[in-house]
Length: 214
Image (cartoon, rainbow, N blue to C red):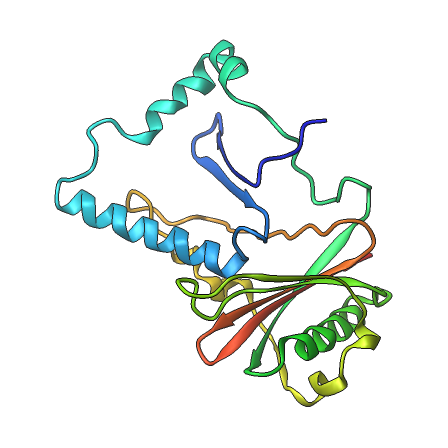
């Protein structure tokens, strides 16, 4: 069976004007914070190139012809269903936290507990832990599967977790062609009935997403 790509970009044009841009990738390739930083850096670079007259004369929007000629679209573009529900039908919700430096595994357990409590959901017995590198140029993302919260040391309870806002990722300020988005949304989909924790180094601390099945 066909599997969704590890990275995908979707562009929709509305009949009333405007566009919707969707970017999707596996957390093994990029965590939400790294992806947001990349998009912001890309937009800044594009703006600088435009000011210096270095932008290609034929813009990317030439590909909008695909939307005007469906027969081309069907031949060259593969489409995958987009849904907030995992393939097995399990719904999930994600809570974003900020924490000072600490042990990522202990922080993950604390975030799973806090997210489950805030969402009124049962704490997942197992979850996948993804930890981003402090220095992307030298480090690597680590992944630990089937982690049990009870099996982690309870050191996370001593760390102050702060509720964070998705706006801290900064995509609301992303500017393309002198325009800012009117709405930005984020979604993390975990697999099965397991939870998912993504620990993202940010300065002297961490941004942490805790995704809990409901």
